[in-house]
Image 1: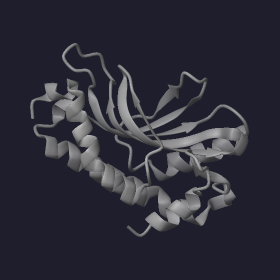
Image 2: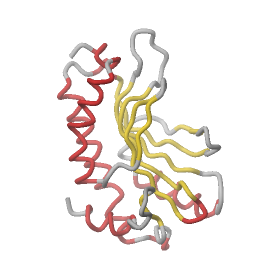
Image 3: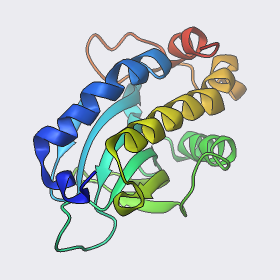
Image 4: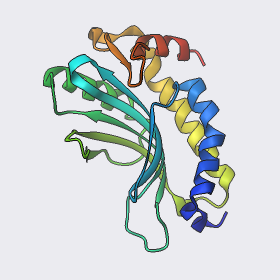
Length: 190
């Protein structure tokens, strides 16, 4: 693979098409997508009543370094957990849950993230520098492995709903009725 293909939007969309069935099979259906100069990703977001956005699983291409030749420097996934907003004590429990259960999944230091809507939280990344890959299949294999490991790392535990923290958490898309506990129970044995 020529790493400069990362600058080609159609090429990136082809990767998303290849991994979409695996994402749906192991994590659930995407809720949104974003494209900017810093990222091109698909995401599955979760919300809880007045807390709105609680956490999300993102997969795609990210700019982690400035490189004049590459629009994005890394490919992979991250889990974002919002830490500010309504109910800070419950948000701290989500943060602790994901930090504990993804400590073997992440492969980069956790970061702080901010959103244009005022959200602040942590990013738990599993990403690889694009230049580490020599062919497209290596990228899709890495993304598929990341999806499966994420599902295996968190969904069995979410299905047990520790301290009832996942009660009322739903997939962040209309009809707003897909409980994460139901999704986790469906996905945990895959």
